[in-house]
Image 1 (cartoon, helix red, strand yellow):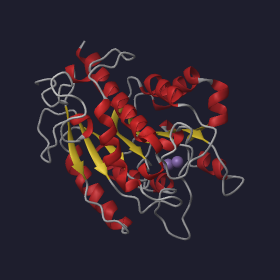
Image 2 (cartoon, rainbow, N blue to C red):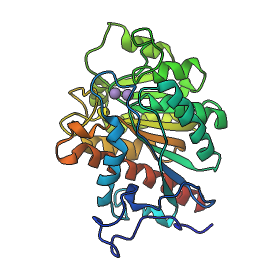
Image 3 (tube, rainbow, N blue to C red):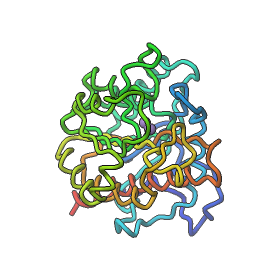
Image 4 (cartoon, rainbow, N blue to C red):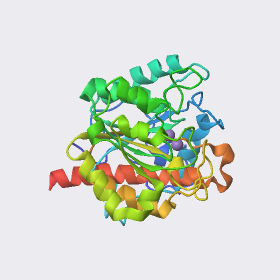
Length: 321
Ligand code: MN
Ligand code: MN
């Protein structure tokens, strides 16, 4: 395998602000070549949003802010493209206003992507899209573990009597048997709820839940260990709702909840908590550029995806050594 064949433009050859805005200026290819390890996929869908709207512009904003990324991750001590190779697939053709039809399209196109033995990294889109991703993932791998960074459990039983929106994907995923709940964990839960027992009900579904309050009491190292122990050797899907992070650092989101971690704390938790896990997919959802002064939320999102790619590369490096 030719390592690093599909990689970003070299920022020392072409200045970072120049060129077409694929994620990290990766090659944009609709046909996935054989020797690719991960694929960036935009899912610009926001019909599942319950409060603010506008996540359909999330993928574009994250791609624009990804231009700043250089080639080496000094904290994880890895240059990802020395060990892995990736492309930007572009966006899946969702239909605004039609969630069930869009779910079918996402699942079908996702299937054809993961059948190529690559790790998909989706850029959302509101959080409703994750259900369709998980349907495709489970058809290939069977039920998987879920690590969910979010200020919400997204396990509402319904939304005004309807099954699908960005508050319901994980109750549906449990009902459909897509998750190994005994290996799944939700971190960062906070904010006002619709009822007294909302969080308990999510726990009853089988998820381990670390609320924001508990997370601050325990500290990053302890929470990172809890993630590692919960997931263990299971195949894992990582879903990162940007509202996990405090709106002071990530204001450009749909349902902001105050009192969350800083971007620094979140990056540390990602690096320690996810290191070495057996990833089958990632997504980064709920970026709303209209509410994002100075592009700080999409900049943060691009840097989180950089950490995901670094973690994929680290796994490749460790299996080679
Ligand atoms: Mn969410
Ligand atoms: Mn959320």
